[in-house]
Image (cartoon, rainbow, N blue to C red):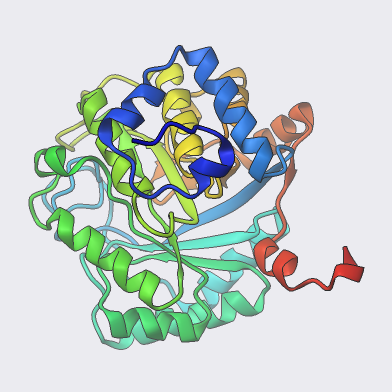
Length: 339
């Protein structure tokens, strides 16, 4: 039975039990945030936040039935189906994101899975070009096999996003067109290709606290931990099965972030979808709890997000600054005399 809860011991753990995580998750909130802030400062510069930009490069028409997603063909949400964007259009958006301060550029395509066709060839070309801009390139394209992951790596992909969404037990209540194992297999293929993993989940879909704890256990027991862990609050969209769900309480958001920070101390924990509903004070509390990554820009695929100017103002008020791109590589490769 593990008894140590020091940051050093926690950083080495990939065999968490549900009971151990529940004990952390259910701490009094201020104690939990204090503990998470302490761990955060042990492993990260608390004044740095990774600024990511997310662009939908292929919108709508997805055959999956994810209950939260307005891009599913199963629901009438008003989202227009659009083909894969042209190479030049994506590059223009990437350059604009870099100019606005983003260091990671994420591209999302509403596909169930990657297929070996001309669209994938165009994505590979786009990945290479965005990488040449000096941005960390991330993609979320649905399920991948090993060969597709390898080709994305060769093209210059830095990270692949594939969220587990929720607990394995609650998963069937949200999605029926793919299995939880499908999710984990794509993460495995990503890791095998030596692409960094971005994987988190969504709260506010009707799940229980136990489901949230089990989702975090799934992520925290991956070895190694995901380099990025986005924590999303559901953005209910009219026409989807979850359209009537109430907003997530900001303290619940902070509790998830703080627990994720303690369980996965070296990961970037991203304050993701749902941030528009948070006051600047609530966002500051989440940064204190260990969040050190956000999405910038007024849209996350098809849902709204705070404007860039508001984020810049918030950073200034809190004394935060954007984290540099490829920081881990710079730190790991720097000669001692350079530090």
